[in-house]
Length: 115
Length: 112
Image (cartoon, rainbow over all chains, first blue to last red; front, side, top):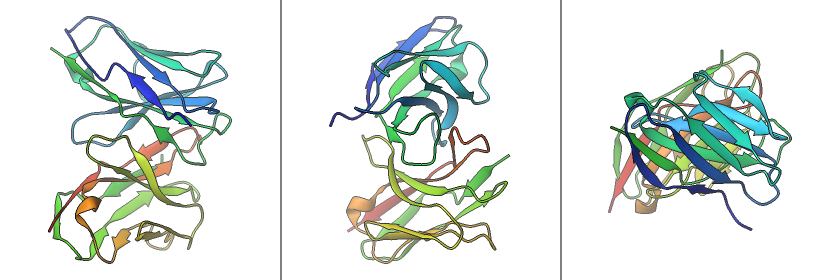
């Protein structure tokens, strides 16, 4: 059973640039969520995707957007990067149809540094 | 909305000491409660959960009881090991049922 994999693991961007982060969900999982974890903080929910559509969103501006593909993999896109976007971005998958009542399986994250 | 508050760390203990990490919550209704753990260099993983009041979650010697009277879900372990050194997060489900809301995390360091 393949776990959640994310790429890239580390990247550095400059303010104003755009970034795309990728996630492959665990085999058989149809729901993917993205979280932002700033240094010393707990993860904060960005959004969730189910059946290739956004199924819930946290308190993040529209420049944070995502996609889910037919194979359930997902992308997180962030436009017009700001310094405060520097964080660890976590992808999580679950087998529940668009909800969270069971266990979330997290990847190791993509660490983004914005200079 | 739902929220969770956990004690700030770091918590530094000697091997075989007793551990308590406090977690309190504010919620509409009685959402499921979770403890997640983040070991160095690894992704977050579920440690234990409780789905209703008075439930006790347990795993790897860790326990936490869902107490609605005190709105708490404290994590305990009777005898910690060096391998328990990690960051621990208390979490609950948001009102929409689409996401977990996490506390800020508590870093535990156990020395031999």
